[in-house]
Amino acid sequence: MTNAAVIVLAGTESHADTGRLVNGLETAKEFAETEGDEVELIFDGAGTQWIPELEDEDSDYHDLYQAVRGDTSVCDFCAGAFGVEDAVADAGVVTLDDHDGHPSIRSLVDDDYEIITF
Image (cartoon, rainbow, N blue to C red; front, side, top):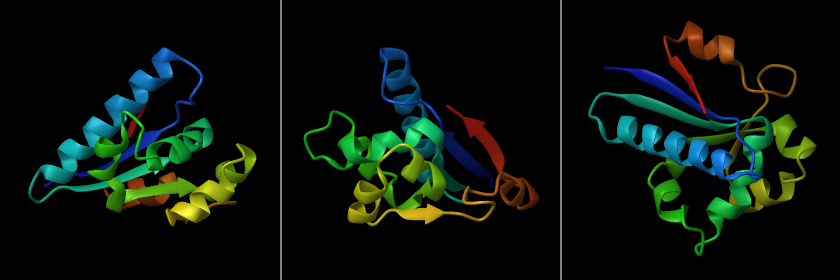
């Protein structure tokens, strides 16, 4: 049994960023599909910008995102800082603000989660 926190920090500006997003989603999906594993998929920093696109059914990555949607959360502070707070709220995605408005990475480590960033 493995606990993994997959954190997507890559924004939406480049082909390389899209590659990191897809790799993060695929990694989260692999953990989600493995019996006994726990996964948290967190969009943080510029990664929060992906939520409006991933929620769009016409997005190339919508289906992959839907496979891990139930394990997804977003940094509350960064959603506001990157201008997607309304889209995140409309989508009903859980926001995290445990540490000064951000997710608490320390809490995840304390709970024996492996931290994987993309």
